Structures are given as C-alpha cells and as structure tokens.
Amino acid sequence: MTDKEKTLKKIHDLGILAVIRGPSKELTLKMVAALVEGGVSGIEITFTTPDALEVVSALEKEFGERIVLGMGTLTRPGQAAAACEAGAKFLVSPHTEKKLAKKMVATGLPTMLGALTPSEVMKARKYGCDVVKIFPGSLGGPAFMKSLKGPFPDIPMMPTGGVSDQNLADWFKAGAFAVGAGSNLCPKEYALAGDFEKITDIARNYITAIKAARTN
Image (cartoon, rainbow, N blue to C red):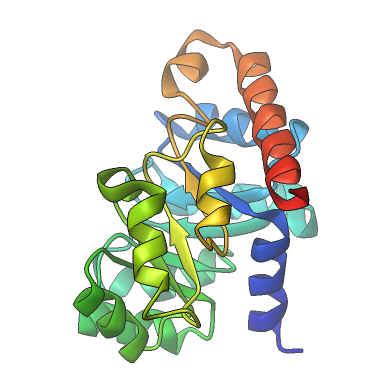
C-alpha cells in the first residue's frame, strides 16, 4: 500500500475531516488540540487561516502520526507545493480548475477537488482527484449526493458544508466516503471566547454519531 493509499484509508476510517478556518495561529493550534482531545484527528487547515503554513508545520511537529493533517481552500497552483513542504498529507480545493489540479496531483498527496454538478464531478475525476469534495453540501443535502452516486457509484465523495452530528447518518447512508465539517464542528466563537472544552464536547458528539451511523 502506497503512502497515498494509507492516508486515504485513514481518512475513510476516521470518517471526518475538521475544516478549520482559525482566527489566529495561536487559537487555531488550541482548536486542533481540543478536537483531538474529543477524538477528531482528521484535520484540514484552510489557507484562509492566518499564518496557515506555519500552523501546519507546528501541528506536524506537535502531533505527527497522531493526526491526519492536510490543507484546504487551495485556490492558486503555487499553494500545492507550499502545503506539501509545510507537512500536509492531503490537499483540498473548493473548486475544480485544471492548472491547480495538475499541481495538486503532482505532489503525490491525496487530492480532493470541489464539485457540485455531474459535469464538475466528472471533470474533477478527469483531472486526477482521489475524492470529489461535494461543495457546498448544504445546497442539495444528502439526497442530492445520493443522486450523484447513482451514475457515479465508484467515485468517492466527501460532502462539506451543512454537515452536522444530526445529519451524519444521512450522509453516510447516501454513500459518503467521509465528511468535512467546519463551523458546526469547531465554532470560531468558542475559540475566541476560550471555551475549548465545548469544542471537545462537540467533537465527541460527532465521533459518537459517526460510529452509530456506520454501525447501522
């Protein structure tokens, strides 16, 4: 099994990536620690986070193999190599664009490209992505992704946006490879208020919901 395959298996087994748009480097590091404490170890640091590359380097040093660490919101080709160098183990973009996709795939890391329509899903796959990020998932919900899985049963899909511990079961029933959860899982206001225990509690709820969904 290649390193890419191992990472993809870890993401699938975890079932969830925490999509973090932190308010600052210091608070983002604390947010991640709170999530890990609650059992969420799939971590996606977005490029919209202040000092995002430094955050990833610090997390790689602190947690190492204890987490699956990647970078998201890639919008420019040069970000792919930078993320890889910082220590990211997977890459995520909110959209599908050829030049960006080529650079992401060239890193050898698992690549996830954002898509919504059937044509975008096929384009993302054509450009070499490993998992199609259905974004924004809130627009069509689990029923929409289930419809996409009809003609594309072999394409792994990860909905992001609109994922909560209340609808996790519906997403997995619809065929999700894993899910991405942002503000519902890790509210920025809790970090700003220093309520990291609340983030840990939410993370535990998500993990419990994922286990229940996959058991059923």
